[in-house]
Image 1 (cartoon, rainbow, N blue to C red):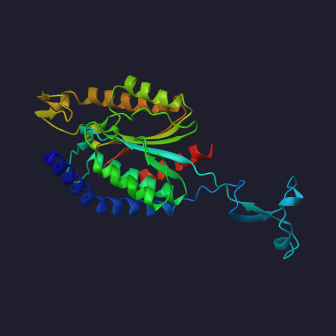
Image 2: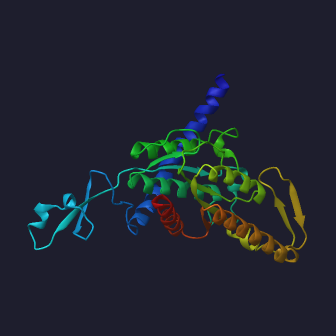
Image 3: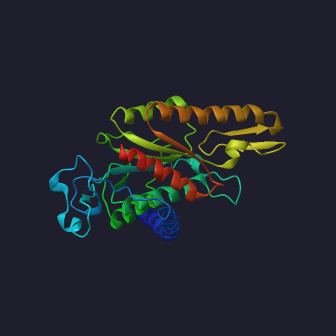
Length: 296
C-alpha cells in the first residue's frame, strides 16, 4: 500500500509540474484565436441585452424599445442574447502511438493534442459553454471547470483510463450533445466507424481532428530503416524505404480520405492537422467548425 501511495503521489507531482506551462501555452493560443473570431451569441429568449436594431415588418409592438426609439426618428427593437449554454465533451487519444515525433523540431502528437484540447476548452469557457472530458464526469462552466479539466488531463490515470484508449470510449450522452475528438485515428476504419456511429445514433454531433506527424504522411526516410511499433506491434526492417514509399502514400491517403468520408456521411466535421503546422490555425478551423455544429 505504501509503495502504491508513493507511486500515485509521484504521478500527481509530475502532472502538477507539467500543468503550468501546458496551460500557459494553451491559453496563449486560445487568446490569439479569440481575437480573430466572433462569439457565438445568438438572438433568443435570454435576459442579457445584446443589441438594438431597426424595427422590421413582422416585429411585435411589444418588442419595440420606446425609450431608444424616442432618441431618433426610427423605431428600434431590443434584442437579447440566447443563453442556453451547450455542453461539450472533449477527448484526446492517449495511446502509445501518440508519443511519436519524427523530428526534435516537432512536438509529439500527444503534446500537440493536449495543447489543442485545452485551448479549445478555454475558448468554449470564454463563450459560456459547459465542458468536460469524455470520462463520465458532468459538464461544468467557468474557470474552475477549465482548471479541473487540465488537471485530469495531465494526471493520466494509466492504462485502465478511458483516456488511454486509441478510440473514444462510448458513453450515453444527451441528444444533440457535442464532441470534440483529437487523435491520430490510425485504427482500422471499420473499428472507427463502429465507434463513431454509436455516438451518431444518439444524435451526437462531433468535430474530429486527426493529428499526424509529417513523416506519417510523407515517409521521408531513405535506405535501410527499422520501424518500431509504439504499442507492442514489434519491429519491421525495410532494406530500402524508397521501394515502398509510393504504396505507403496510397494507403495513408486512402485511410485519411476514408476517415473524412465517414465523418461526412454521419454529419460530423473533420479536420487534419500536422504537428509541423501552426496550432493556432488548427484551433481556428476546429472552433469555427464546432461553432457551426452548435448553431444547428
